[in-house]
Image 1 (spheres, helix red, strand yellow):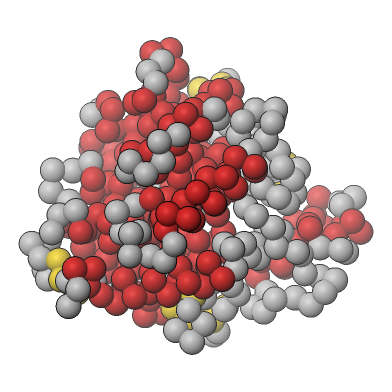
Image 2: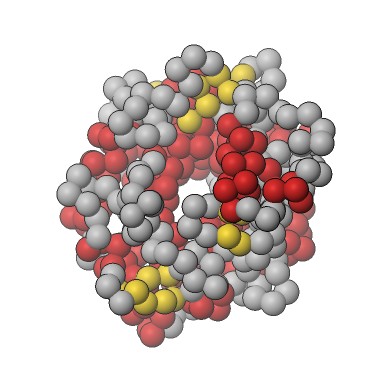
Length: 400
C-alpha cells in the first residue's frame, strides 16, 4: 500500500483512507476535464427566457427554485451557459494547495491557473468577488457580479490556504485586497446590534454571513493586525452569539420569514466562529455547545448529512462537504482532534456511499426520499466535496 493509501491509526480507530483518496483523484480528473466550470443551481436567471420573469420578484424566485430543484438538466432555452465562478475557484484552489494535493495530476499547474482566474474574476471597484448570475431570495436581490460576503470569503480562503501552505507566495497579498470590502459590510441594527451584512448595500442579519466575514477577517488580521477592526469582529460575533436559539442553533436570519435552519449554513457559522476563537480563546463553551447541537440535529447515526434538522431527506452533498470542512477546522483548534476528525471521516464515507457516482467520477446533488438528484452542479456539489476531501485527508495525514 502506498503512502497515500496507508491506514491512519491512533485517532479513535484505524481507518483505511484509500477509498477517499481514490474518490478525490477521480473527482480531480472529472473537474479538470471541465476546467472546473459547470452548472450552478442558482443560475436560473441566466437562461435565455429569464428576461420574461424579471418584472416580478415571485417569478424570479420561482425560476431560481425550479432550476435548482429539477432532477435533470433543463433543455435549451431553459438552460444557462456555465461560466467561471469565484467560489468554485476558491474551493478548488484550496484543495490543490492543501497537503493532500501533491498526488493529484497537474496540481502545480492548477494552482497557477486558479490563482489567475481569481485575479480575473475580482471586481475592480472593491477587489472582492461575486457571482456571475443575479440572485433573488425572499429577503434580498443582488445583481450579477456585485460582490457578496460568501463568495469573497471562499476566494480569500483559497488564497490564504495557498499562502499558509507555502505554495502561493502572493496569496496573503491578494487576499488582503478584499479586506476593505469585508470591513465595509459592518452595520448596526437598532435592536440586534452590530454585524456584517451580506452585501455592501446592506441586508438583514444573516448569521452565517456575519460569522463567516468575522472568521475571514480574523484570519486576515493574523497577517496584518488592525486593532479597531478586531474590535468590530468581536462585536459582530457577540451579536450572533447572543441570538442563538434555545435549541443551540441559529436561524438563517433575524426576520420572521428567515427562521429556518439548515446544515451547511450552520457549518459556515461554526467555521467562522472557530476562526475567531483561535485568536480570542473566549468562545470555547459556545462552540462546544453549538457543535454538539448541530451534530445531534443534522446527522443520522450512520453519518449521513441531512439538509434539514427535522427530516431524514434530502441527504445533501453540499451539507456533507461543509460539515467535513467545519469539523476539520474545529479539530485543528483542539488539543485532541480525534473525535471530530473521526466524525468528519464518517460523514465523508457516508457521502461516498450515498452520493458518489463511480461510473461518472463525480457526486450527485442529493438523495431524496423517492429519487436521487444526479445534477452535476459545480459550486453546490462537486467543488465543495473535492475541497472537503482534500482537507480531511490532509488533516488526518498530518497526525499519522
